[in-house]
Image 1 (cartoon, rainbow, N blue to C red):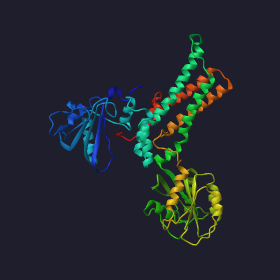
Image 2 (image 1 turned 180 degrees about the vertical axis):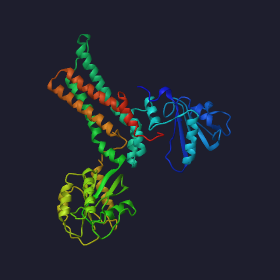
Image 3 (image 1 turned 60 degrees about the horizontal axis):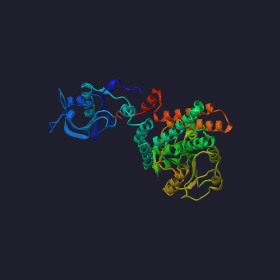
Image 4 (image 1 turned 120 degrees about the vertical axis):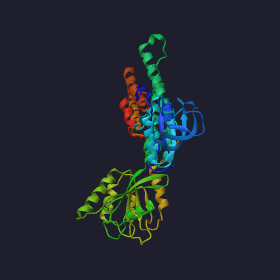
Length: 461
């Protein structure tokens, strides 16, 4: 594959988030990295210059230029190929002051380094064979994971769990394709005859493994990225009170006046093993107020696209037309019906709600009673009991598309074999599936595909 930068140019960037902190890191990688760092780093006690240090060693010193000292720092040296990027790497661990880190970076750039682009360190790791493309994607997923289970899933992908599964499937397809080609093109060479039953069993096995990956995609996605959740219901059913309860702070205004919430109020909250990207929306009702009408329209738009809905109903009041419309709107969607205000006298007939919703929870958002039941209902609705974040999983939409295309091509191959079509037609389908899987791991990915992967990374990683 063509390398991303010409002649392995040394690149540098701040590798820690902006803001004050105890420690900040400036990373330098590439040809001449040690020589460039040596121009600005002076050891405090050691007489050994950076270029003379062994890999995986550190040295206390100071970063300075002709204008004077910038900061005290510890320089860590990693020698190629035993580094994250596979190149010579120096990391300067300084005090976590944004101004100081920028000055250290500027000193390295003046000494000959080039500024790193988004994901450029990880891209070099990929191009130098330290990571497959799917493992590189898992790095960003690990950084952005919103839950413990999500982080475990991303770490498993980073450690190669998905790569091993995809590689095994690819090998089976390559073996099948090679056998078909040899049998068709060189029958006189004593090649073992293709046995249709065994070939079909192999294809079905690979198809099954790929389909299991596809089935687990949504569960893995919500663990890593969080669940886009909308609280909906008619005015004054307790939507804003629930929002404040789950957020643990006052996020929405709560009054007895219907229509108080007009815009969308958002926050990320943790509920059990999940993170909910929660949206408190305007109460659903017919109104002449143009501002409230806009809020109701936005609420309906959010409901149409969300991963999960909390449909709220007032236990102290009978079902009204807006309640029934909401139930019809959410039919067949991932949804938990919340019967709120159970601390008040019951006037609501729950039978109709039980018929309309698969998950119904009774609670009081005012007192907090019933949150445990809500947690259990949400996890039961969204998380499969068999889902194991340590098992191979697809972590991006790109990976899902590659596996979907491969599974579809294998399905066509199985159909062709069962209908008795020629082996040439069968080979075309198998080759399509193989190409899709190689694209996933980066074995046959185009530069455009690689560019799209790394453009989503942060600078410094």
